Length: 467
Image 1 (cartoon, rainbow, N blue to C red):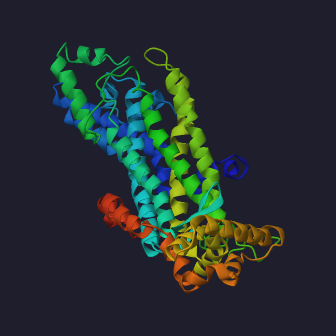
Image 2: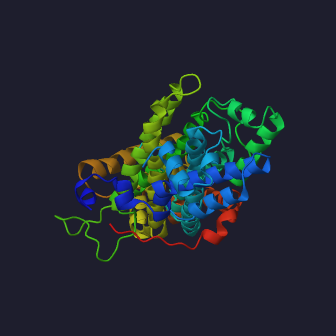
């Protein structure tokens, strides 16, 4: 108990992560998987003719159902509990047989935990995009007001990145193979000796154990370990997803500052200890904070893979014990948090409309010029009139802090009399959003909804967070 109170515990587990992901990388999962792998090996070796009895396998299976650290300590412990099976436990294998194969099982199972969570985030955001597909809002380039877009179209920019992440995670998960039964330097020499030179039986042993562990394929060549580029592949798609979520949550934080969109806010939640009126975007900030850690973790497998001398070196071990679980735990946390955010995003259409009203007259100048030309005016004369009035209105906004009064100036100038009756239609925000609503509809139907089909049965989980 004292080490829980006085020793360091990773906040990834103690504070944030889901029980399922924390268990996936736990010692209990690791060691029970080791025992299963020893049973798979014994069963396959027995089936292929090695002198292993039913009683020995049965003894191992009975003990495995019940529940010191390195592999040999576990071999000895397992053997002590299974005296009859002791001679055949770990027969022909190296420690990487259990170590690496267990890591691959954990990576696969980790992806299987993350994928439905990512699907739920995409689903919630797709519903949001659909709801606000035609609500005009200021677009921004360089974080300066630009042509209008819609709230739903902007959400589709977020969605498109998440859809790419979904495909990346699925591909990384499906590309995973088993290390299988390869021996000390990957040559399978010990197993060839066990089977007295029978290459077919060694290959069949590898295939059977791979199949028992639930993998379709094993890597045909390994050193003592599977290639550490596999870890790069797995963690790079998580880091890439971290970059996506950081961007989304940064956008939400910027929009919260403008009071256009806010993350959900609990009735009892305290926004600020000093300023009771504040509604800080705490969930989005948490996502950004942890997403930075997720992105930074990618440096570990990149460097580890680069220094695996010849058939292997052990300087990967301590690093991987941290970087692999932490990447999956961190990804798990930010997906859970983002799901909570996307389930309760709050939109303030009147604030959005007010911001449009401040900027739209400047953006509508081209429409005014075209309408005047259509009414018989000269383009150059009209352009000059609009330029002068725009600069006067800009001075009111920037130097006096007033509202944009360009329209009032246009209405007061006799030159524009021919088009005064058209002003309302020329300044209707919905005429400035182009094909945004149509793009939203097509994107959701063609690319988003089909991707979610396999996860339909897992969509109902709602997330409530304690902050």
